[in-house]
Image (cartoon, rainbow, N blue to C red; front, side):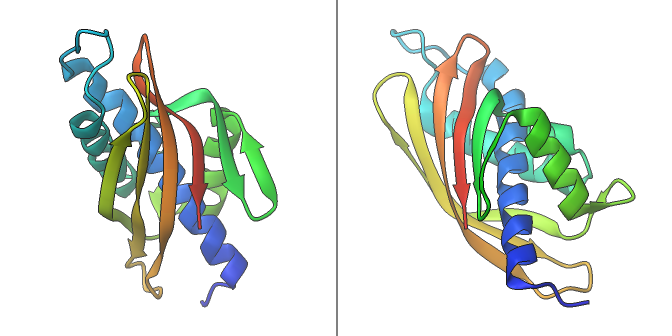
Length: 159
């Protein structure tokens, strides 16, 4: 079954958001605090993205999106989707079947740029592959904020 351009785009957006969320939850506990109290962004966010993709690939949507702030703003072609619960629902409906991902997810070309002590920008490419479908890929940018619970995605824009 071929997917329309809109369906591929929505799928890519969902995958990116899930990945970012899952990573935030798994990597922050091992972070070493800087003198400012914020954990160093680059290694932690990279590890969180890896964990997010792993959660996606095992069918754990909530784990994939665990890095998201509850108030995340996730940009889609139809406009912003606000709130992690809404993003989880969107991802589950469009990218999973019977509790399993339709395609496997990985991130490439990831760079993390600290934006002061409490914020960071992560950009990269997401790739969805397998499932008997044509590979889908796109680019993402996420804005992260260091909060008491660790690094969290507050804004995700994937295309």
